[in-house]
View: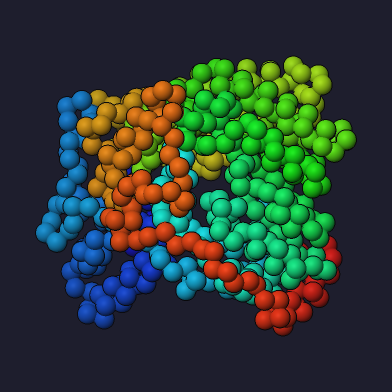
Length: 514
């Protein structure tokens, strides 16, 4: 049995020919459901063979079995319908949502590699889901609602994990870790617990408007300063309104001032190119923003060794987001804007050498777009590319756009569609999308209205975080029978309860990872 999962499973149609079943959403309880059905099927003597097992999985309404759904197409290439092909199979499949993260404090004893890895740290997920409402972000949309781990569970997971692995760094992970209702208390208490050891804390990419002095101080208390990454996403204020990334340039400057003043010498800023309604000027605004960041850092520290790295990639529209109907920007347009931005960054003699520049070209993003929003016909493209030698295409030295373009021509020759049809074409509201029968809980009309808000009046229809405002009726809580679970709990991490574990971590020699 080949069973898929993860975020890409929310549109598994390009892989429908290669998968027996697909699980949408959280896997903790779903894997128990699947294994219990497999066990019962085996104990009953494997009735019906492989199809018998798949029928029992599909009947739950929580496991998607692609072969049990028939897809019809209209003369112009669009999907006509996606309907179950046998009795007992539901018309749509719903995602799994775990509502008690404290009951699943994993990993408890992860495998420690013998070789150094890129992410040389012990990772703890402190909450799941995000309701910030960034219109480009599939992860935030499909993982709703927000569910926090309690501060005490986070503390015990960190202590047990560090003792089991000996890692010298703990990553507090989520889609937006600084948004945890007790993130300051978590940082302070863990820094207290591990003061005097070589164990440090880190956060992943952090929202510009969520980073604060307390976090800066606690993340650097023991002298370890891992890199800080902030994601403004759009270079101009107008662009950030379009994507509902409600941070201003002044927010960014206040944040980097805090970081540089707290001892950091380098920050990384992440942006996207090719967003809906974007202009050349929106991308070039990244250069002036980066210059101001360097200027601010030098003023805050009185030093010249301030660095800022600009990382920018092509935008790929994702299913189950307001931008699922958007046209992807053509690669030549993306490349031209990235080249112009690089020139603008290098042209400034006062700041250019202090600004690093990393970018992803437009052609690989176009293939990502094909896989992101493709239907079952794209399976033939994948197979053709593989037969032509496509391997490890996520690495630029192995990627060949010409190979994928040729695979599209070969596999799609009998259909009125091509690579551009799947990527740079805008969709209408009435079009059946390949993933419409897969239920993430989001109301389709709500997504459409948010898409219209994005492209009208330069994104004037901004949407607040529903954790702190009245419900915006995205549909998730009512459709899935869930609700937002957030603190504060008022509890604190008690170092005395962790003393037996801390004595082990304290024995790790400085400079050693384990």
